[in-house]
Length: 259
Length: 259
DNA sequence: CGCCTCGTTGAAACGCCTCAAGCCTAGTGG
DNA sequence: CCACTAGGCTTGAGGCGTTTCAACGAGGCG
Image (cartoon, rainbow over all chains, first blue to last red; front, top):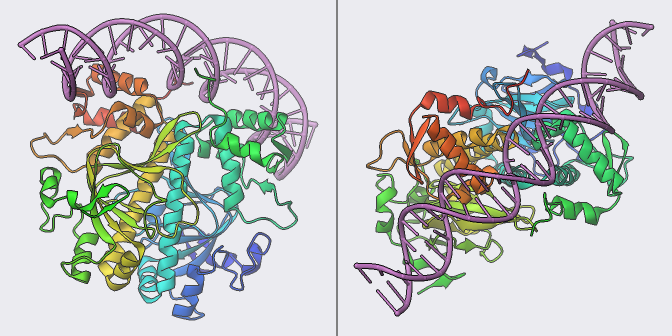
């Protein structure tokens, strides 16, 4: 079995992601139609070149960027992958949250980036070493456009997230987080249209929203007590009042009533 | 005089930015060698096509993205441009800070983005309507690579910024902000190597760091009292102890001494 | 059954925000 | 030239809220 960095390339099989995937004919796991995977196959044929492999990641498993070969581009196929940063005294932050269809482009980074790539849930990723990826971009216009668009959309999501972190109260952040998940996660079959499954725990939510786990918990109970959401399970959110939740997410719960 | 959105295209002249620019032969204002401007000229010749114009922005002047034509890509030439978001009760956030060499890509945004593009200082921008930009990317490999790299580097800077906003204390954020400016701003002639000019005021710093202006002011005075920096002017920071400032920026000043 | 992790709830404290006032510079008009 | 105003920066004092510390219950697993 081929291994790299303790990852087993063969451990990932297509049918593992049948549960939470879109129904595209190519089961690469990406949302959009013009995904890199499709271009990969049309460009290189069915047999992917060396330097392009799928890997399965267990929850908590890390990809140390320094040990990855040839500055790869990582495409998220299934699950949830985060860039986790640690401060000296133990503070933990999820600086980036990557869901299926997102890319982590480690190529041509002008500076070392601090943080580790960590799977928050069992995940599958597509690694493409930089030479392969560059060849792909130059050969396929659709792949290039798709990649630029996807990167740009992720960038603007980060801007929104900065807005959340900078000036929103904990409850507002949680409300915004619910909407973010709602828009980014594929709806799971068997779920109601206004139900969202949170794929990770309170601690990860807290580290993503810049809060403490206790504060996240309190926020959820507050929203529940007010009838805006309901929590059948700790990781299952049902939006009961979309309008009010939207208002809260957009700043409807300031810190003080103010003058 | 051609005008658009109240902007005057002719009001910008090359010599206006002679003071704070790199010494590249093409005075487009960008940092890197393989900039879009150079590719613009080699691709389209000296006469830029319609849909590619320079504009000068006064401090506080806004570019409403909805009124901009053809989903342009905006290249920052000089100054400092921000994406500013407002919450319903007046809270203001600078979600993105764009300095010379950065791009704001409004093309193919899948969602409306909330916020206005605002000049924090007198600035100059290069607008490229999307058709022009796409033609440029498909014709010039260097322009394409440069744009992807620049976007990706900006994305990772945003990740670092999220780390700042999420879990750092005010003083740590200010320290990190000083380093960010130091690395992103071109050194001004006549300044010492460890002096940084902050191109905007306390309020903008606060809205960028998710703080209140008073807290920013207090942070600067604390760092000054401890001898880590000195502040000859309110907008001129001199780093006196790089090592200690670096420690602080990386989490050396937790909220509590902890167990 | 014991152990560990996770989520929730409670109580207290520290810290940032809020409100307020004073100082300084810059711009304006007399 | 100076009085006057306006806006930005700084400093002070107090309150509210998130953090911190702590305990409890539920679920998973050896």
